[in-house]
Amino acid sequence: MNTGQTEEILSLEPRFVSVYGADHSPWVQAVLLGLHEKGIPHKSTTVPPLSLLVISGILMPAAQFEGGCWVHDSERLLVRLGFSTVLKKDRKMMLTTFSSSASQRTESVWEFWHLWSYVRDEHPNQVRRLWNHFWRSFSVFYFFLVICVARGRFGQSSNTKLSKNFMYWEDKLASGNLFLVGDTPDTLDLQLFGMVQMFASIPGRSLRVLQCNPKLPRLREWIERMQRRFSDYTHLYSGPHFEPRFPSPVFSTRTERGFFWLGCLVMWLAFPITLLTTVYFFVRVGMKGLRYYRQSDEVTPLPRR
Image (cartoon, rainbow, N blue to C red):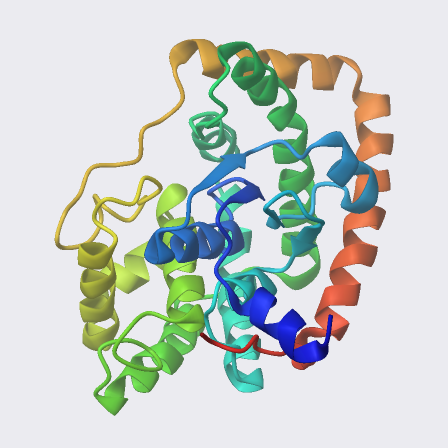
């Protein structure tokens, strides 16, 4: 098969996509939003398959196109779906927006764990769904430790810093486009709207700054356009917080939350093993993630049909 034929096949939208990741992650949200925008059938799970776990730990998002190899990194996945690559300065600012806001998620320990317990797994089999809720408690513990370490090392961003980060996107919308880079949502829109979902999944200062800062009218208008476009999207945490108002996502059942908390109990009873496993996956995720960050300036768009 020659290069032209290979590129033509890769440029075709996939017929089905499997996604690993939890919708509290802005990067997972970006991929799910992209799949929704394209109308591509997909399924998602909040616990990685064993084959993926041994390769990259709990690094998310990861997606498998029509049963092929698992692929990481939200931008790469969105490019595979037919969206555009992101400029280097925009990519850097997106990461800055994320890092300045993520540390707020553990300001209330109870809210962090409580709201994570409400994340719904979409596996169709009830037994498997309960199993996933049980094991997801470990992923939550991992994220909790990572955020706490980051807060201890780098501190927390002030509201002034958060506003400054948001002003970058406010100014970008001054071009007159309906969306960040044109008249239809693209990779930047999906990633930033995914960030808004993260802010709303555990409401904190970033969400309040977005809602109340009088210097961000264009950004709120953009959120309104995105909300209208994704009104039937099932992971819309921002729905109750911005106009036009939409219901919260469907949350896990009481039984599913019970299995999540049972997993937390088992994890704490076996704390030495839990901690060693966490360190192992921290190394695995760190090594895998570092390789993608090193390659982040080399994301090549696939040819469009």
